[in-house]
Length: 336
Image (cartoon, rainbow, N blue to C red):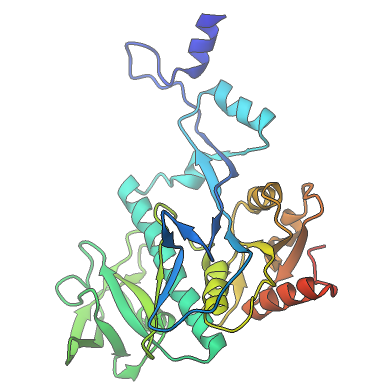
């Protein structure tokens, strides 16, 4: 029995490089983060430059855990006993991308999500924003032209104030074409003309190679302090946390609310992956109301979710309305 147990947990044949792991990953419920609270003694959503309103309850960001390098016995064990989902490993780690490229892609998605969350929140609150360069991507076209902390004010002479506008201008061109960015650097206004590169993950598509975020222009600074979390699915809940902290009253009615969904600068909420595991995590933590993207609704309610209400959300305003209706005891538009 001991020998069989050891064989089941070995990831290679002893004395060889022959792997015993299966080409699958197990996806299951990941940790949740209250975006109104703290992580490692630092606010998850940190706002400075203006007093923030008191908050209560929770606006939980849900995540999916991913396990790899499993033996067949371990993979089957997770599938049979935990409710995890087994997916081909290439869905998690595309074979045409290196580990560094995957990490870089996830970080880009998370940074873009943070920027969109800030823009969507500021649009809801009626506050102006500006585009700030967070970093440049190694070996990209922007290196030696654009610097971190540059404020982008125009592209090819057209004024811009949201990252999506810059992305649209880039996508309208081809690799090798030039693009001119007007940036505010320190106290100076600088023009940089840059030949666009090619996106290694999308051959034929142009790439500038900058990570952009958004900052309000009225002295408010918004920082998102979560490490080792990637992807775009925190966007909606980040926006809601910013709005709650910068507006009077409790957006969630002081209740325990969780949610997931991408966010666009115009406030549109988009679908995400792993919704069944996020719903399960929320239900197990005692969440009262879960905000789910409309496009994920059927999957969200495909498993038992106890007495937790799962609201159908298409826009940021839908999410705010759902929380207000739930708190007031009114009917909520639910996934069905």
